[in-house]
Amino acid sequence: MKARALVLQFGGAAGTLASLRDKALPVAKALADDLGLKLPVLPWHTQRDRIAEAASFLGMLTGTLGKIARDISLMMQTELGEVAEPAAGKGGSSTMPHKRNPVGCAAVLTAATRAPNLVATIFAGMVQEHERALGGWQAEWEALPDLARLTARALENIKDIVPAMEVNVERLAQNLNATNGLVLGEAVMLALGNAIGRLDAHKLVEQASKASVANGTPLFDELAANETVARHLSQD
Image (cartoon, rainbow, N blue to C red; front, side, top):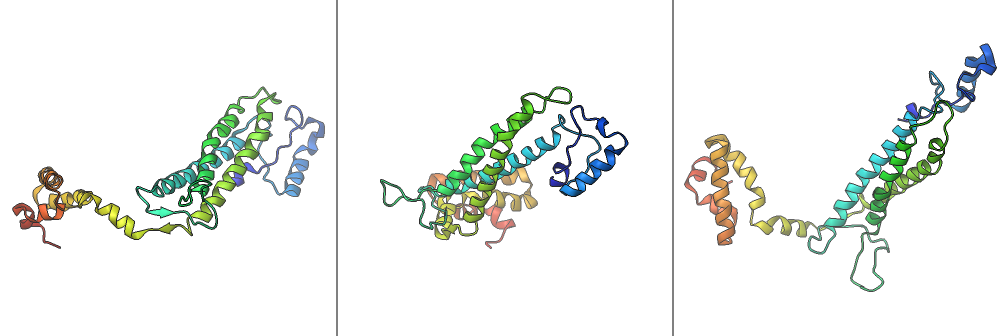
């Protein structure tokens, strides 16, 4: 993206470089080389595709980071308690001493909430007049730097959170076992389907699942007691 976005814009008021006559292209090339920028085919003062692409990239990256932060913050909830942000002296509550807030995730989610509107501002600014625009170009001046700052800070937060994230293995196992093995029903159905057909396997496992819920027994026990299952699948 940087290779496409970081290009020279040098075109004069109407984009023709007419004032430089036959020196226009050599001057543009020399200027691009001095600035370390690529030389575009044409001036692009009112063709904002490059800026819009950069904004899109930042917006999508921030959205991806927001997804990570959302999942971590949900798994930090007391009911789940499967993971936690690294404490590092932050995340406490002013009123509840026991509380541990996902403050890093909150910052990322704030960025992910703001970013789409900033991207939209950049896109709205693409519709510009002729070769010298009024309003659209200027709208980028705050929106794009704000978007870049939000993305950069969100990325820093995620880079701090993920490597040091605390994982509660016991709680993960407890939550997986909360359904008495129902969560693994599909895996059994697929294995059994190889022998008796998928539809019949689905019906059998569905009936065993209902029995597991009704009796409060592990799905494994209900399946192990079934003659059809025992005929085609080993205990292992």
